[in-house]
Image (tube, rainbow, N blue to C red):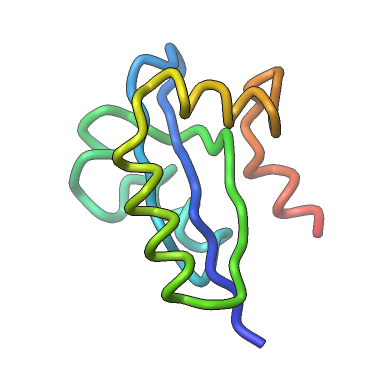
Length: 97
């Protein structure tokens, strides 16, 4: 079964958010952290994974990503606080699994 992840990255000051989707969360976050793919996350140094969730269906994941991208900043902050109140970088915990 394939899983699809919707995720939110931020920078160290939590001043900017990036929402993305991937089928390989570990690989994709690695790419963000090492700025392998140029773009928004590289420009704004969004390397801290603070939130994610998975879906079994790619269409549901795409719809979720689009919905989250439309959210106001306060909604994203609330969602992150529910999952990760300390705003820790969740990437190291992915490597332990």
